[in-house]
Structure formats: structure tokens, C-alpha cells
Length: 373
Image (cartoon, rainbow, N blue to C red; front, top):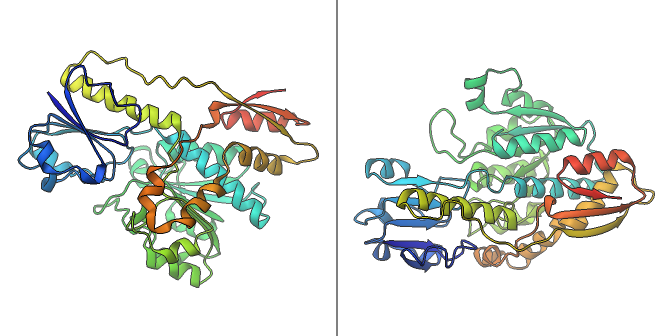
């Protein structure tokens, strides 16, 4: 039995060695040769799992430690009896933490009061639903757009994209990358999207880079339709357009989902997939992180609700540091991403807060923190 694995999948080394030959390789160095006699490929999004890589190999399982699947040629896999799995949902809490930190950071920078501002959430799956909860907790008006869900559930809670383009102050993307069909998301943000905006907006993209047409983004900035952009994903990454980074208010190297807890969940799902497929006795395996909750003491004296939240998130996850990290080395995107120090999620903290009011306790509790007074 042979397994080929991306060497950047954390907590994996040593797990399968008692049962199989395991070959670890950089994701961009996984080629056909080592897969010739492999039973399973454990991968990340950097490896394009297509006919060029897989044809003529013995791979029968692809287990990806990612939430997305656009790096997997699903038609080829189906026609060649190759099963594929992803770790969908594993990093949702981390992405929501990233979004919240970025939202509070930008609003602090420009003096934006979030209460009663309108946000359009495009893509209301696992992550988008959690973003919705955060925004409602912050007192924002929320508009939801998700055509696949509309076809199943009806339009009751959803809004047409055209209305979002007219009414939203902020728009955030949480969609999968699809290149065709009725739900195509490739270049969903295009010049027409920009032209339909009736007021300047703040935009977030933590989904996939090609959801946003780079030239349309530049056009939107030139037209004054985009005031601020928070970009974690980039068209053409790891080779990103330096002009796009220059125009972004916050730019990070595709690390929105990079929490210790999220990565552990992803690896757990990969191991479960392999064990079920190859009938290995590790079905209840979980990585031993050996982590205790971190305790933070924060003084909120004389601060109102939004400034209090901004101070807490700067202490827990200061997104500006990740922005600075990429701006120092934009041409070395993959190295910056690959050497990223995984952060803790909100649930990994105990907050001891001085001079807080009960409303802040309620909000922070809903955002996943444990509060001790």
C-alpha cells in the first residue's frame, strides 16, 4: 500500500507509516512518477489533480485538505473510478475570524460605524452563514444571495444580486469557483458588476481569486466604485499582480482559513477519508494539539461597543501584521503562505476584560470567545 502526501499537510507525518509506504512531497512537485503505484493522493489546492497528473497511475483516492475542489478534475475522476474528498467546513471559523478582524480593522481606519450598515453576502454556505451571524450580531443589515439555495429553498430569505448592487455598503464573496453553468462564479465580479454599483462599496474576497476579474477591480477603483478592498485570494496566485496589492487596503497570502484548529480538522478529515477507503484502523484518530486556551487581559475602560471589539480583535488577531508580511515579499507569495504561523481561533481564548458592559459580553460570547470577569 502506498500513499503520496503533500508535505505541508500538518500533523500527518507518522500517522500512516505503520500501514503503508508514505511519500511526502511539496505540492508543486507532485508528479506522475511517484503516483504510478500509489493507492491514495493526499493533497492541497496547489496540486492540479487532472488527467495530466493522474492518467496511467494507480491512484484510486484523492483526499484534499481543503474546502474547495476546483483543483480536482471531477469528470476525469468519475470516468476513471477515482474517489475524491475534501475537508469542507474545516476552516469556516478561521475565515470568519479573518473577516471579522478585517471588517473591524478597516472600519477603525476610516471611521465607519458598522451598526445599520448594509452588507451583501454572496454565497451563503458554511462560511457565508457564519459571516451572516457575525454581521447580525454587529447590528448590520444583511442581504443574502445564493442562487443554488434559492432553487431549493425559495426566495424567502434571499435577495437578487441587482438589489445588493444598489443597496449594499459592503459586499463579501463566499462562493466556490465554477467556470460554467448557471451558477458560474468565474469573473462574477466583472465590469458589468462594477457598472451596476450605485454607491461606493467596501469589498471582501476570501473565496477564490478568479471570482474577481483583476482588470474589473482596477476599473472599479478608478471609477471610485470600490473604496476599500480586503483580498486574501488573487487571480493568478501565487504570481499576483503588484498593482492589485497596491490598491488593496488589506492584502494577505491566502491564509484566511489558516488556524491551528482549522488545519487540525482538515487533517482529521483527510485521515478519516483514507481510513474508510483503505479500511485502516484509525477511524477515531484526531491530532493531539496539546494546546490550552490562551488567557488575554484587556482593559476596555471608556470604550463603546465597536471600539471595544476593535481592541479585542487587535489583541487576538491583528490582521495588519499579515498584510505587512505579504507587502514585504509580494513576489514570494507561496513561501510567505507556506511559512505562515497558524493562529488560534476565537474559541482558543479566554478573555479577562476590565470595565466592560454586559452587551459587550453578549457580543463577544456570540463571536465564540469565553469571557471571565
